[in-house]
Image (spheres, rainbow, N blue to C red):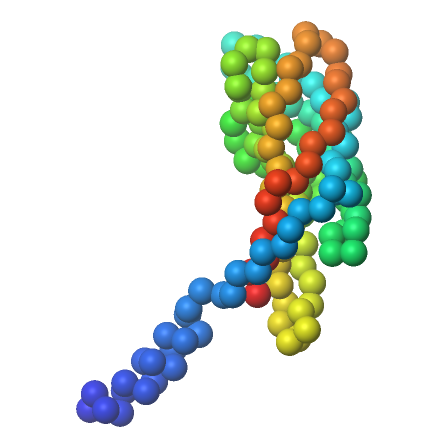
Length: 144
């Protein structure tokens, strides 16, 4: 096969392999994530966390309510698989709680977009006492 015959096929394949379009939304003040029953328990083997989180909805973002648990410094999916989290040490007794919320919507051009909101907060966790706190997403972007 000559190069002139195969070149259009290769170029057509490249266009489908290009990155998707990135869309960015502004985070509004009405988006708050409420964390409750947040606990950390540590032993010689490491630390484990456990908490509930709920997020408000607005015109562009669906609400959620789920339970998260896992081992420190490892990304885990919560019970609602659209929520992922990493809880990492930020200097005893502080911890960094990192949360990502994802969902899908249809755009006006009939393409499906996957949206992501991300938020992070440092919290102080007293020994053996569950705490509650609020955090806000600080980034939102979508890929279509």
